[in-house]
Amino acid sequence: MSGAGGVYTVREDWYARVTIVVAFIALLLGGVFGVLQVVSRTPYWPNLYELLARIGLSSSADELYYRGLTAHGVLLAVVLTTFYIVGLSAYLTPRVLGVNIKPVLLNVSLAMMVVGTVLAAIAIVLGWANVLYTFYLPLIGHPFFYLGAALLILGSWVFAAGVFLAFLEWRRTNPGLGIPVPFFGILTTFIVWIMATTPLVFIVLKNHIPASILGWSADVLETRLFFWWFGHALVYFWLVPAITLWYYYVPKVLGVLLFSEIIAKVAFALFILASTPVGLHHQFTDPGINPYFKYIQTVLTLVVASPSMLTAFNIIATMERGGRARGGEGLLGWLFKQPWRDPVYLGLILAFITFGNGGITGIINASYQLNNVVHNTAWVVGHFHTTVGTAVALTFMVYTFLLLRELYGRELILKNLTPAVPLLWFTGMMIFSIAYYVAGLEGAPRRTSDLTYGGLIPAEWILPLQIGAMGALVFAVGGLIFLVQFFGSLTIGTRIPITQPATLMLNPHPPGKATILDRISLLIIAAIVLNILAYSGALIELYGRGLQPVPPLLP
Ligand code: HAS
Image (cartoon, rainbow, N blue to C red; front, side, top):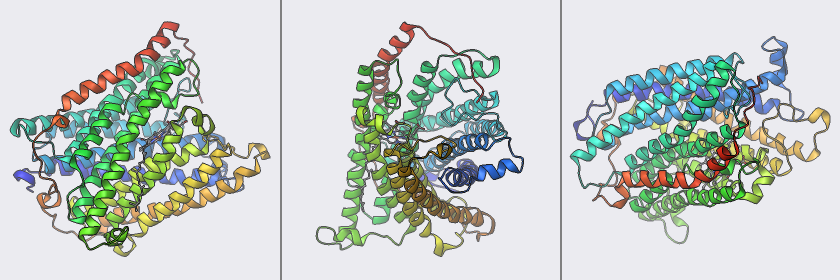
């Protein structure tokens, strides 16, 4: 099949088809664990883990809860996102650039990622790694868990190498041309990913794998410092592809140009610069780190929040431009002229609006003082379900309605139900998140198997947690409809000829001349310098004081 510039996309499309199917298998399994969890930890609702323990799945409901929570977090926050993002990028890269990704890199990457996922899944499903998706030491899991995670990440690095090589090839044949916005998004995604995962790979090799295989002791604060150096940048690895799809699809459907291509590129550049040097905002309550270093990273956190605000402005201005071009008048008339009947558009905008909810709570989390109120409470659960759980996951789901036709060559089944997916997900998530914010502000904790505290649960927690659980069931129904449509279309959907990629991915912005923003190497150097500045103080403090290793502990 030929695409932009006559490029053949057979290998990339095969890779994308497989990885996106794996991503949605993860959504299916992770979703089941999510439902089990929310029902079981809602006060006065049945504890499903107790029933499962009674039929012999484990000796204790508590153990099953942590096993389920590990599975839920790893499947959704790691497997769903990573597999979807590499798949989407494999699909977009040749279409936007007109350059192929080297097939050998696609094959090696896929093999490593799948083997890694299977190894980690074995460890989690058998209850050998109840360490949650943050796997803080000294809690320790089976070596399969860490080796699997390492393979998954290294496999994605191999894919990233393919994207970078394709970019260099494009740059060689297009000197002086600005990078097309959708590809700028992909490039940003993988630059952030490599910068994020480098500290993680270092600490997993230094501490987790020796602790797991040889029982070596490790320093807890050192592990957490490197984990969060990765952990916050990770969220922009999830977010940037979603933003890329908003930038691509919103103007395309409205038939107008993006309000500002420069603002879009500035936003991506800021993500490259400031995604990684901010992890200390997850460690405000950790002792042993000088508050000055935490303050520096608080400021940088506000810097990394700014590209999201630029995105908000750019998308809303594009919507207004499109609405007015379609006849919308007055202050808000343009809102009624949006193509709301297009379920993909509707879903992307609902995901975008939900990001407003999650983003604002992120700013609250990032405040040194307010973080003390919300840290480790249900509030944080509300925050990440609106960000990664909706801004990202809902964007990926609704965009897949298009990919079913354009990538898999299948007609969507149960078409009339399609708008229900974004509407139920959005409504359920709003109820869930707001109720969990309220519960969190009342002090309800996250990550505890017994929320009733042996019958001593404060009355203020009960109603919000129950309302939140109802919201969760609403968005779970939306997710179920999506999964039925996705897997159903793949198996019984009518086969259709695949649209020419060139028409699907026609770039609404013909790229202009390169500017300073297209000097990717400068951005990378500046980002590395910023990381050194932001982290050197905390590292000198940590290593200067001397490590205090403790032996690993089985959960
Ligand atoms: Fe976060 C914890 C701070 C963004 C994910 N975050 C988490 C965790 C996850 C997560 C998973 O400072 C939990 C980790 C764990 O297990 O412990 N986060 C932020 C900040 C931002 C932020 C400042 N987070 C994200 C994104 C995520 C994500 C994006 C996933 C994709 N987060 C924190 C902090 C913690 C944290 C602390 C630690 C908490 C603790 O104590 O444990 C910012 O990047 C957010 C900027 C975004 C905005 C929103 C812009 C508005 C938009 C839409 C506007 C729409 C409108 C509607 C107005 C400022 C884009 C228009 C209407 C129409 C009709 C069109």
